[in-house]
Amino acid sequence: MTEEVDMVITMAEESMQAAIDHLEKELGHLRAGKASPRMLDSVVVDYYGSMTPLAQTASITTPDAKTIVVQPWEKQMISPIEKAIISSNLGFNPDNNGEIIRIFIPPLTEERRKTLVKEVNKEGENAKISIRTARKDAKEELHKMQKDGMSEDFEKYGLDKIQKLTDDYNKKIEAVVEKKNEEVLKV
Image 1 (cartoon, rainbow, N blue to C red):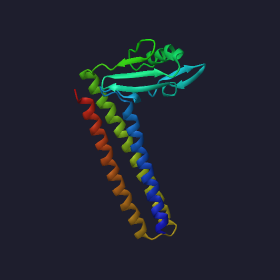
Image 2: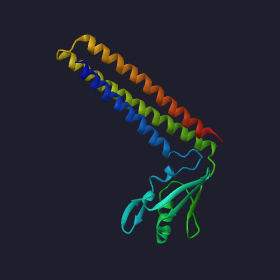
Image 3: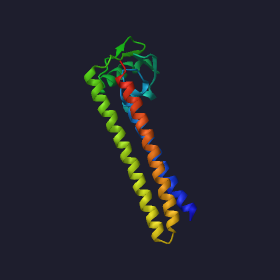
Image 4: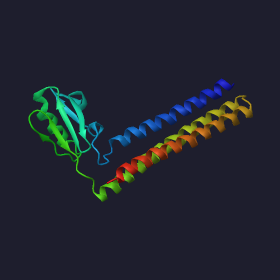
C-alpha cells in the first residue's frame, strides 16, 4: 500500500514542480530593464514562407545589460527578422546595420515597473493555484484509496506529506516572485 501512496505523492510533487518551471518560464519573458535573449522568444520570422521562431534563424546574444544583438545565419534574412521584431508588439526599435540587428533596451518607467510587478504577482498566484490543484487531486486520490480498503494511517501519512510539499512549493513560488519583483523594481 505504501508504494501506491508514495506514487500519489510523487505525482503531486511532479505537478507542483511543473508549476514552478512554468512560472519561471513565464517570468523570463517579462522585461525587467535588463536585456535577455528570452525577451525575443515570442518573435516568429517568415523564413522562406514558413513561420519560424527567431532563435532558429539567428544567433541572439546580450553583449551588455542594455543591448540585444541578433545576428542572422543568412544575410538575406536581416530584413524579415527586423520586420518580425517590429511587428511583435514588444515595443522594441531595432537598429539594422546590414550585418546585425541591435536592440537597445530603454529604462523602465515607474508606471511600467508597477504594471510589471502586478503581472509578476498574477503569475505567482496562477502557480499557487496549480499547486493547490495538485494538492486537491492527490487528496482525492488518497481518499478514494482509503475507501477502497487502504488504512486510515496510510491516508494520514499521505495527506501529511502532500501538505508539507504544498507548503514547500508555495514558499518556492514566493521566493521566485519576490526575486523577480526586486529585479523589476531595481533602477
